[in-house]
Length: 417
Image 1 (cartoon, rainbow, N blue to C red):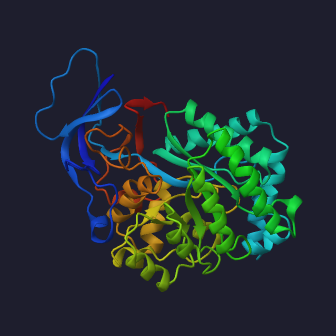
Image 2: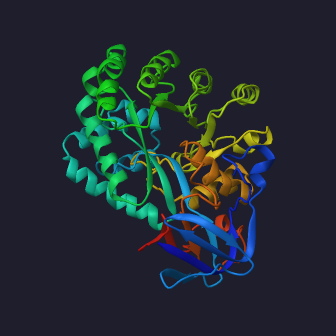
Image 3: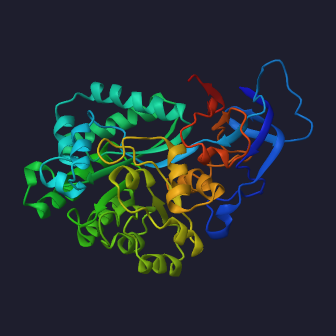
C-alpha cells in the first residue's frame, strides 16, 4: 500500500540522519527537528520519503490525504502501562480523598491485591474485551507503540492468563505491543507473610511457565519500600534473563529503595517511576555508560498527589528521560500521553520539545524498539497522527485538555476514530 499525506503545516519529530538517533540525552532532548509546508510518503507501512519540496510521483494505487495545515507527529510511545485489568477502583479514589495513602490502602487489602482478586474471577475472553476498550482509547489519543505488563495475577495461572490476553492484543491490533511479566508486583494473598517463598515461586515456576509459552519480552519487579528488596529483585532479574527476558524495574516510587542501583547492576532496560530519585541515583547514572532509560510517570504523581520525578535535573545532568502513562486502575486511570506531556512541562519543568522527545523516541528506546518507532525517519514504521491546525508545537502541552488529533495512522493505514 502507498500513502501520501500532503498539505502538512508542520512535520515534526523528523530525523534525516543516515543512522537515526535511537535516544536523546541532555541538550539533545530540546531538539525537535521539523519542516513546514511538508508532505510524507509511505510504502507498505513504512516511511519512504518526506520533504517540503516537490512531491514524489505517485500512481493510481496511492491513497492521498490532506492534513489541511495540521501538524504531523510520530505516534506516542508508552513504555509503562497496566491496561489489562479487571474493573475499576474508584472506591480507593475516594479513600485517597479521605486521606489514606497508597501504602495504607494496600495494607487494608486494596490496591494491587484488590485487582488480583477481581482478575481471578474473570475469564480470559472477558479480560480481553475490557482491555480492548482501553486499547482503542489510547489509539484514538495518538499512542502507536505500547508496553503492557502483567502483575494482577500473582499466581502462575492468572499471570499466564494476563500474558495470553496481552499476546492476543499484539496479534489483533495495529499497535506495536511489548509484553512484560510482572509477577513481582506484590506478594499474592496465598503467600502473605511468606514473601521468600513467593519469590521462589516466581523464579522456579512462573518464569519457566511464561518462557515456555514465549509470552513476555521483559521482566519487571516492584523494587520499593514495602514490596520487593534489591536482593530479591536481583534474584528475579537474573532468573528472567536466563530465559531471554531483560529487566525493567519499578523503582524509587515510594522511597529511595535501591532500584536505580540494582537496575544498573543487572543491565535493565529502564527504571520507572523515580518520584523518590536522589542525587546519588543521578550521579550513578552519569558515571555509567549504559542504555538504561530513566522513565518518569507524571500521571501517577498527579493522581496520588505525590512528588514528581526530578526530570529537569535528570536532563540537566546530560541524561536521557522517557515519559510513560502508567495506565492502571489504582494509581493512574489514564493512558492519555498528551496529558502526560503537559504534566511533564507544568510539574517537571521540561520544555515542550523535551517532553515530546521523552514521549516518543526515548519511550520507544525504553521498549528497545526505537530503531523502528518514535520518530519520522526513512525506513521506520509509519506510525503517526495528524492534528487539527495548531499555532505551534508548544500548543500541544499548553492546551492540556484540548483534543487536537484529527487522524491516526498505524503501519501506514488510517485507524478509524
